[in-house]
Image (cartoon, rainbow over all chains, first blue to last red; front, side, top):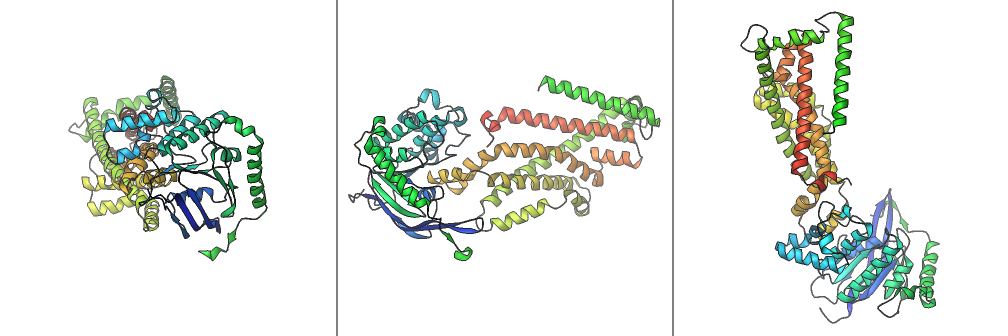
Length: 265
Length: 266
């Protein structure tokens, strides 16, 4: 790792796709940078390009224009991805889900089991109880924990998390948020979280960027000390940060999404 | 096997037999609508004439029916075995093609739209009723259906499965083997079950036109002599073959495959 301080630099990123005959500009000259170990949340209304951004950052999609650089890394960094849905393979047990990448690289069985136990404990699940279970035998919150552990399986240097708590009840949501905070701070990973939940974005992040029509509408620094407690959510300063994000999103909501002519591509 | 389902099946079979007996009573003509008694006393033992016996003989008739049923079962099994495996391989291959996938898919769907039974005369012409021709036809018919179903099932695998596998370092072949195949097994099992039923019809069609053995051959002979009694008995033989094959298939898949794969429904 090079002591640059910047883990990831996004330069003038553009991406468009076709939807019902129209060309939708998902990202439009998007630029920002993320520091090493920083927790960055990306918020924005539906279709603002949040998930597309994660797909490009993880190299699952190629941008139309612009580039993603990793100045702090001499070789491309290991990237973990916690998907919004369908993150686990339902025909594999928790243990075999957690060690899929090790299986591919040909790691020995004992090594895989030991790593699976470690990952399971990291996300607060009992290995004895849960490793042999299939995803459909777990609760929604437990599945999200397994997915978080899976994202950590390859010891990522950058972790991308897409809507980590969108489908769980609020108690589980808080538990997951605490877990993400603990895991991120203990591992020192650079974390990028896409979320609709503004409270979650403020509580988890060092910085929140509001996406609007494919570019950064606002970037808000959140400088609450860590580790953060649940009481923080009730403070005035917390509410001020939330209000600023809501305002940025409300202003962007009044502008129509960018639609390009059909022959754009 | 669910005892309630067995009881319901027995009741339905009983009702069907009573219904037929009623028709036989009304029509009162053993040639067009033989009674149940006539089926047992005349039609069944008369299958003996397809063997060495020149008169009605229960023992010889049973041997003849069993032998021909075995020939049909053998062809069907070869057909679905070869066709099923090559169908899965073809479906996966078309799915994994890159840029030429659209044209291969077009070809596959085009093949699926060819009326499969209309190909029988062509196979008779090419292979003049040889064993290989019958098996090849059955395999082709089963294979086309399995290939199309495999392709469709693979196309419905959630995109995130592919993304996750490729992020974790899986190659294209590894993704096919460790993601696509297990993800489509529930659909494949349903397809195989469905095609297994159809394979008996494919074999019947092929034997009907071009073979000197098998139940299809017996059906053809019985049809030539307008022997409704024999046709009804052969219908029952086909029902037993079809039901047994589905029963054995379910039994084998339940025993051999992990329960998790069988219960998966996306």
